[in-house]
Length: 250
Image (cartoon, rainbow, N blue to C red; front, top):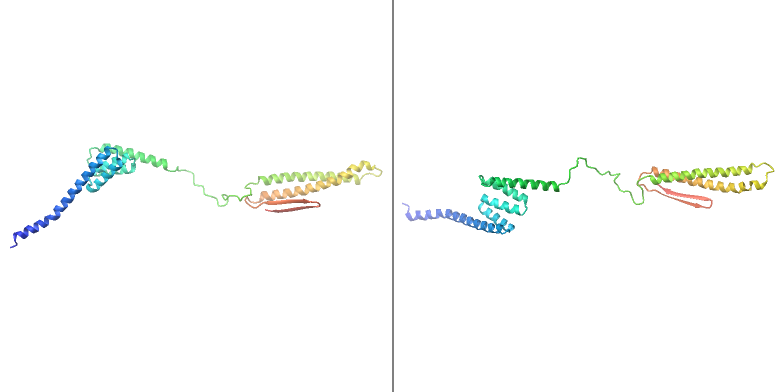
């Protein structure tokens, strides 16, 4: 027969784990209660950060739903709207028949509206227009020293055309003077043709030079206008006695 003492020893050891678990639970509850009281005092004093830390630690130890309400109130005071909303929602989900359900639900509506308005304020406006994609050709900035329109080219073309026309007129006047000298009737006094004789080569020279410059200018202006924007466009003209030197690239 098993000795009664052995049974007593076995029973004693069998009860040890239970006693240890109960002691641990009691200690956790006591610590949670202490933290709750500390958080309540801090909350009443307006020390919301400290109160929040105490309530969160108390909840970690006891997992009592009422502590979620305290946590939500601290977050609400600290303007942590999303955290407060989450804590209030958890409180209602776990508390069941919470006596302040209507009050909490009203606060949840206020916080939800505030969060939605904040999201709209920081969100970029949504445009119904399709996005504008960069054109790899048109959107490349023009190199320094170039023009992106043909206004200057057409101005050069028009002014050079005017010089060309003027040169033709002056040359024609010179030819008229030369013809009047060469076709003067026999016996005409030289004094009558002296002016025309001296004027003819001058007018012819001016007319030829104007024709050359006008033709050159119209050619450059037309080539410039027809050259794609951004292409290199340079030209130089050098007048020398008896010659006209032209250099240019497009």
